[in-house]
Amino acid sequence: MSTESRIPTGKELVTSIPLFNFMSDIEEADLGAGMKLHRLPNQSDDMLRASISTFLGEHRPPSVLMPDFGITTVASAGGRPVTGVAIVGEAQLFVTALRLHKAGDVMATLAVESLTGTLRLEFERGEDDPKWYTPTATFNRELLPQRNVLTYTLLASELPQVLRLRDHLRQLGLGSQQGALSTPLRRLDRSYMRETGEDMVIDLTIALESSLLRGVRDELRYRLAMRGAALLAPEKTAGETAAFLLATYEVRSLIVHEGLDLSEGSILKILGRLDPPIDFRDLPQRVQDIVRQILKSYVDRLVHGASINDVNAQLDRQITDSLTSAAYNATTE
Image (cartoon, rainbow, N blue to C red; front, side, top):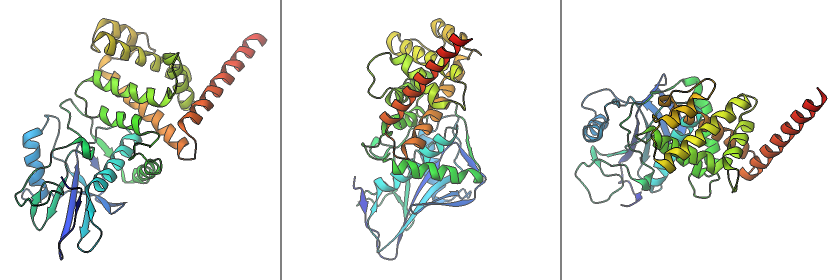
């Protein structure tokens, strides 16, 4: 497949990426980088909706509805060659920023290219017949999960915060292998595609390990819990955060090393010891929520020049100071 396409004179190339499980009070908004977020046409004979219907007819999970919104970019003849990787990469940055902003299973799983009324496989030359693009890892495509999903609702008042997050991700080089948070954020994104809660927990715990435990070789469970609690303090109670992360890491170990399901007794006992106890069905979403908060905190710090190692060293000093202060207070009471 070619990743570049030149547009014939007098033509426009429209690339549309529907957003599944997404709602908004926005009718149309400029996202920058030549993209716009907008409500999709609702005519049943619209070419884009026809392509989506065909795609969903083959791949549609029961909980996924026809999308009402999408991201679109338009390129004209005479400009620079259109790069498929760049368009998809920009859209994925925006989707990742949406996920960091708040909960909701927003998905960008399909891209449709339109040129003079012909739909074709994206950026593949020499094809005149309509084709439907199937998600591939090369373009960071995502598969629609079969599990029940939570609709993402974006208010117009929230869009500036999402765009600021998107710009921060671009600044940190998320789209490159060198991006400091590429691995943890990629694991967060993958958790949205997983079919089971167990797989979600595994991906999300890897996201925690590749950020909170960067370079650590021992006392993994303890350090993950303490650093995560320090990172989210004072917005979240440190003791509650640490207890939840300890339980999450223990559950992850039972899933990976003993092949247990979330509904099995050993895991239920771990979740039952938390205050308040957590239903095993709620655990994947709860883990996703705390991973979102932790990674967003890293983004906020790294964008001002710190490295992950810098942040973690500061967290360790914060933990040491807290323990020293607690010990001192205990001796003077």
